[in-house]
Length: 458
Image (cartoon, rainbow, N blue to C red):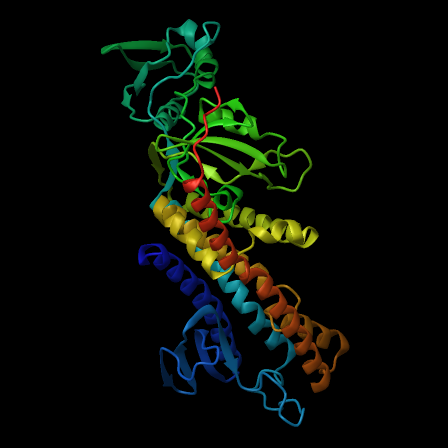
């Protein structure tokens, strides 16, 4: 993979790790706990980091492996004689409330960053996939047909406001007062026409409009999803699903409905070659009877960008942050409840880098939104009540608050040992998917490239 693929992922991971560790660092400083090291990445046995410098009592370093980061505080582990630290400026001897604040500060920094990023997305502009401003099929019984609209008409103005795309039509229409009539400017066979809609006709006519059908050509393949693992590529045209011909993109969801977890045969046209691929759609939301998802998207024919004011951006960011938090925890619960099923869709740094590169190609707003998602995912993961993670430190602090006495060095060490085993197994579980996914993708693409052509379904 080239640098233009990896760089967005490295930048994204760097930002997420930096703000998380900065939260711990600033809170530790504020609470008077000495910070010995602030590191982005790990050295994993290498003698020296990429670079390092010391200012005051803290060494700041950039290490070789961007798998995370750490803030090493004085007294963050028992001494060699299994004695607990005693200085107030040492982490384990610090009051439980202070340790709780230091542990919470990292995840909180990720949450705040996600919110700020989403506000920025609203201010810079949210891009939506758009289409040409040309009408698609219109039944002759529809209100739009009766009003004088015809398939193939290009709507070029709404209430005198020029429009150039499908979404612009409805945006311009929404800005006209409901009790006012609306005039649509049309182009039909090279001639300019106008259709006037009375107030009572506006909603029935506009709600019945359909855009021109989009051909079932793949515009994007999401990393880690079934289509990715099956070898589907951008530009492939889906000719049939399980032998049923597909003529438009809009037919695909119906063709995959009810086929989650069942192998599906896709007949494809790839650069004039007819090939067959078997893909198993995933059950994305875990509910029985849900439509299967394979992880493809249509090409973006056009893009519509909408910018929001400061207050509206803040409101959208608030509700957007809440929605992402709910989605992340729902995904975590689905993974815990069905680990063998959803483990294939988990990923580590390579997967995040791939996904970040995909989002960067879609636009700055998509990349920033993904940055917000990863910040919240890191927050949720670190709040798990497992030893070594922030959630483990929070749990110990709360236990000490309830018991009203400090935990012993032996209990702390045993707690950490259990945590290291769990985290090591969890990291192996997640990180092993990254190279396996790349290998599976490579083999699938090779297979679809080398296999003998087959005749497409009629």
